[in-house]
Image (cartoon, rainbow over all chains, first blue to last red):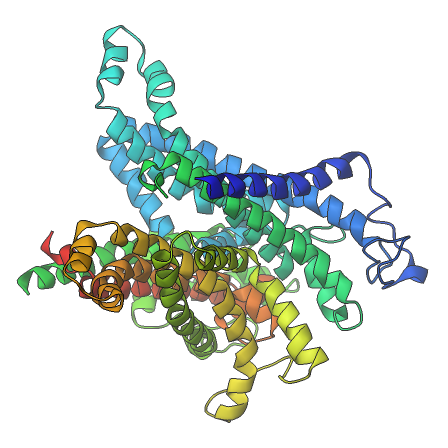
Length: 271
Length: 317
């Protein structure tokens, strides 16, 4: 148990650092992240530019900070999208059952038959390579997993006595659903949303790395890595910082996810 | 044995509707792409008449359900149309590119499993010791590193600084096996490192579940050596969940390999899809989506069919 608490704290701390960088960047960055200065191209890290400058002479630290905000906002919106739609559809399907439920599950199972990133790539073609495209594409790709978990919880909860009681005392179906059935799904949802946040950060940076994500010159960790690639030999610092930020975020999510999973899964308690 | 046969039969039958829906989704994704594919093929200079002729030729003037039926008919015959950019048959493009991706993924997942399962078992056996903590910490760290970043770093160290291995490109196995291997070491190593992280944690978790069961205590009480308990009783039962995970990992890799192929400039399936997206080469996009999803469904099918080999309880229920 003690180790898990340390994991949770460490994970929260890592995410806190990244989130802090993102938050500060909204109000202040050391330099203008978009300001091109051709005389300062590919400068190594120094006291003036802590993380050096890129191929256009832009300050890397400022771009990392703005990129953090960009990546985190996109990821949070994507997870919110999947959780919102997955929960609503899952609640509906599990509650009404019957034909509507069966049809929804067929569609969701078919979507799950695609690897997540592949489905997202396919949807990106329709919605276009930009910030909103990523949110919609990844959001749709991850909605079925939320839907499944919520529906399963609803199916087991709706037969319980307290749900029956809520109906008997005259609460409407809608109130019963949101007040008494939904809270049962919170624990598995929190665990899923945490891991999903990690997948989305990774997928978003991957898509941006491929040039299908947030278009330059706006910085994201993924597109910074992509533009660093041709200059890696001369300017190693360019490829280092963005990757480290992604890895730090992922590590934070994984550690926090472990702690949450073990807290909500009683079978794991005696570890 | 009859139980096993029914299990296989059911699983095979279930695959058919899935495949149909996958095809339907791919068809609609491509139809929903904004812009007219015929316009893309002919360019801006095309006349109304040329457009109409080509639309008729591709069957785009027919109603949507009819289009789907026609397309399915062609797909079932293995005809995925021709690429717009270079007029090659999409099917042969897919097959040649798939060889590259599949070789690397298979090498990587096999080696990763061979490393991860013993490591996970060891960690579970030595639960809460320094060794266990070190293994779990290492695995979590590896799992958190994005593949394209790890790839870039390995490339920088072994390709550019030490110059031990080639930096860009690919040589087919049939041309020069030794050179082919040299080109494959870095991408495969990148994948191995990352998948070892995921699989070790999975193997450890399943081994721990098994270790606390009564028959393990019983086996120990019988006086079996540690080695015997681990190999005969823990490993077979702990491997089943890891085996399912391997299926998911394989599928995830197929969908996500484009980034790695971009880092190492490998002519694989993922890169083909991304290039086709940029070029608005609809037949190739459509073919890539369908083909990759098909492989994913087949991989999961094989994984499920082999599952009873590792966990005999499945076919009985």
